[in-house]
Image (cartoon, rainbow, N blue to C red; front, side, top):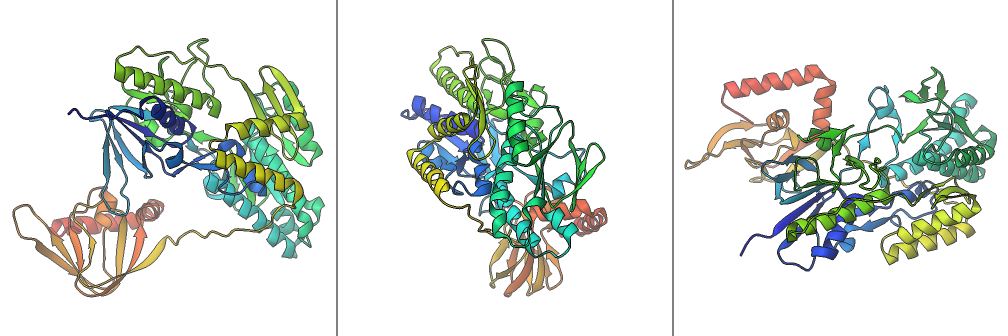
Length: 536
């Protein structure tokens, strides 16, 4: 029996998830086809509703839908992607609990990897600004907002209190406007619960590089949005960009500094490094695709969403990187992959925008639907209705309706959910005879021995294992695989109970990249061990 046709989809956003859903509709009943979806999360985030998490108008999990239920016939891999080998047609995934990479062979590959947050040329933004792209970003911004209000309520210095109650949002497109509107409404509604914070001290500043916000819409709607936000207390800075950031100020392109502890950035975005590294034609950091959404020069490589430089087959116009376009691109790709498997001709991607909507906060929005321009309460009702209908899953629709109904009746919640990050440096305990590192494993940690002893064992084909060394307190192992990006070249087994300090791969690489002298020390020790033929 012939091997099934393997379709691998990279990315669990709108483009990737809907490609899997449409493929299931067309090919899910067939035994000669396998569909796999690789996503960092096991859920689809409904991005248009994410800003409402700032105020708590929606529950944390009510804006997400589990991928396993949306795509029940698709095999889901919730791992990071390490490499994409187009020649061998293999995608390599990062290790899970077992430190071994996983290879996924494919016959058709769909790249649906969105952009990532970038801060090139803006000193301090990566360290001090809050990105707003994911569910975690929204929750972090909500917690941070409540935290600065808590501090402002007990801060005796009026200048510091003013800094704490100033909020800067960079970007006057859809995301920036919706975040600024939601954040402004939230802080002005809950400030009454914080004794010691004068509502007149609240300041929300929206930075925009042009002279009219929401450039995606008509000037009329842009002006209406500006008037609504200004009336509600949002200060809009036109022709002004975020140029940098410190822990206590936003640095503007005009040279001005705004003292603040809260900087939210929605721009710029950078291409996903995996997309940028693919040896295929690119168009402005996106994959260049033909009218059928194939990547140029590759008949079984497809691209959808933010990473695809697509054009409408009807007009030749560039396709905007919005959810509605990504969903329709996904449908076209699913049709064309099914056609390729069955030997039928593909179809061109044709789609014109149905319209655009943007929320301005509580009970106000702007909309352009089928060429009809709406604003105010009617547009807000339409905004909620459209996105409720588009929300995947009946259970999620019911949850959202319930949240919205309660939000009309109850006060805003001011509970701060503190979710502390796991410590970058942790302590681990191992019993006698336990294998800590297996030869051939992926190098993901550095171990520093506090107490106990381990033996370093070299395993060779057709030969008994050889003990290379015994390591004790104040010694370490695991740095070779981290520095060389190679598999572990020896096995580490405990001779006694061992307590060790463990540093993860990402934190180790960040440490040595920030301190070159430390990296030189590790590299010198690495060369010494190689010379002594005692690799770790």
